[in-house]
Length: 106
Image (cartoon, rainbow, N blue to C red):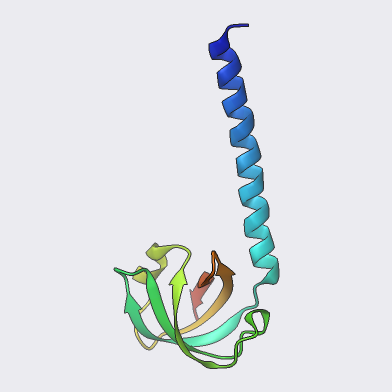
């Protein structure tokens, strides 16, 4: 077997392992997150953040307050407007409070 084929096989194996690890990490975050109700107060698309007035977030040991969160997917900010009532999940990702899921309540 040529060194090139061995390298390709090694890269494929590493890619599969990385994908499995990433999926496990996301599932772990989702398992620890708790849906919380909130209201959009400010949107900062440039910084990838949204400010929410929210209820208690038990999984983060955080009381009800108003604060700014990073969002896991900045595209979500385009679906929000100030004043929207939302339901969201949050977790601490790389040391920062991050919204891992968000939907506008109807």
